[in-house]
Image (cartoon, rainbow, N blue to C red; front, side, top):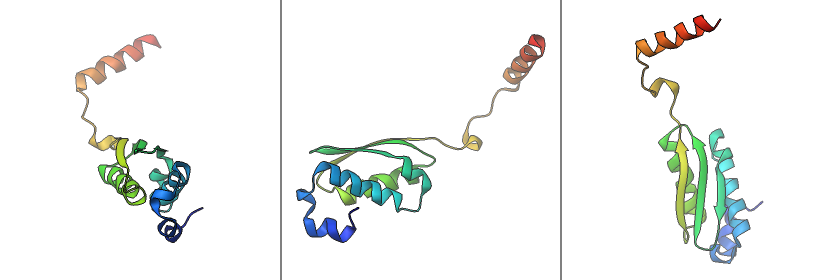
Length: 108
């Protein structure tokens, strides 16, 4: 595992893609945000691609800024989906709920 000081002393341009990928995984794991641990990271010579899902745009931004700090010379492509809480979802039409419930009752 690479430490931040090791990344700086080696020079970011000298690190191979797999080492950068591992450094970014470490950064996400050490962020204190559990959902960032499941983010997938792909690194090539020109870009970093982040994918997965988090619960807020704030967490998506934290992941993106982590990638920028570890790989500043590469383009960051953030494909992380934001899945908001159930409370933020639109309410169902009560008639739709009734139709579904009556269908379930008839099938029983």
